[in-house]
Length: 492
Image 1 (cartoon, rainbow, N blue to C red):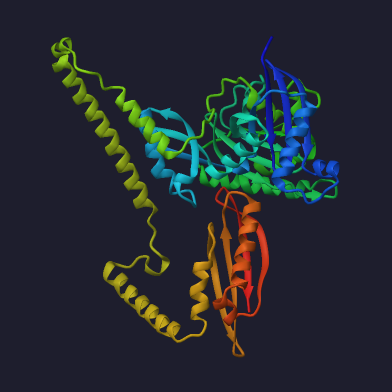
Image 2 (cartoon, rainbow, N blue to C red):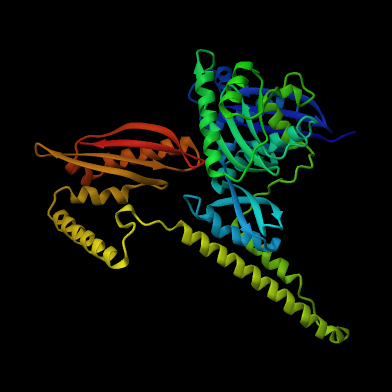
């Protein structure tokens, strides 16, 4: 008898679960977070408590007694990147990636757990690398939650990779290589682009509503903008197909997307992909994480130092104690070692040259000094330095100085300012403070901004110059592929 497995998908506000035996789904269920509050008749349950209650509820529903579970998380928790690197040995890729990835994340690489897969292009002498990472505190929070429930998460992976395993197991899409995959539920949607079967870009898309139904026009417009961004950033990637997985198949959406994107669009229902008539997006993602698919990218998230330790261990395996019979082969071994060393040095030189070329290409002069030679640039710099000296002298005598200086010390983790607009009228100062906060999830970011506002209100240096501190606006925005929170705070 096939071993029973339990798969779970944790979405933004919903959860899906399946129990499988072999390839067959023997039980499945899907719930929203609100169902726990309705059942408990309480509206202010802690978010973590709600998730734990919902997991227990859905496991009871599918009669799962197993302690081992396979977990698929919303793609919004992950960072997806696609990189090109020169061909090198596999053991060198992980350590080389550390330097590349640091340029694309707004926090330290030590805070990230990650894995990668790649495709070789020998003719072009390059690697196409697909990178997926998650902040360590996010994955720790999930593991801790399951530990408290006496459950062991055997696998934790992004839902797009769970979904692709189900998609590739169908005859209709098994041969697809270069395609876009859009999965849509009532509350969330994700657009993932795959090239040579590996994810290269992922975008969360809000699902706008018109009454109780999806606002097709606004939704298609959001998809179109994400598609255009991909086409701009990944010009070398040609897509052959656009696949939509949704329980609400809508010919109008299909037609609109085909017209807007000018690409072949295939729309498929979840229950067409698995042997479950009640299947929805949440349940097939849960089914995908327990699937025994041969899909090549099955990430095991590790930290940078673990890759360094593995590389050192791999090198140490080549060390063997000297034996007398080895002496006869030393000359040949020396020749081989020389060839290997030359190859390694050549690879390292290639990597360094590649990094220098990329760094050189990334340097852009400010528009004020574009087209100027170095003596002219120095003149501009001297003028700017004189302006700074003047501002510094003025700041020493300004009563607002201590308040502005305090802003930097009160800035919480994950915050960077976009604008600090100071105004002075009728003997009073007013300040509009705008910026972003990135902590990996919207709830933590909102709490961070609230704490920032509270700290401003409680600071003597701030209240000496400003009597009112108000949070004017708070909204989710996308920078590159990351979801961040944008805020406006007014002090007057």
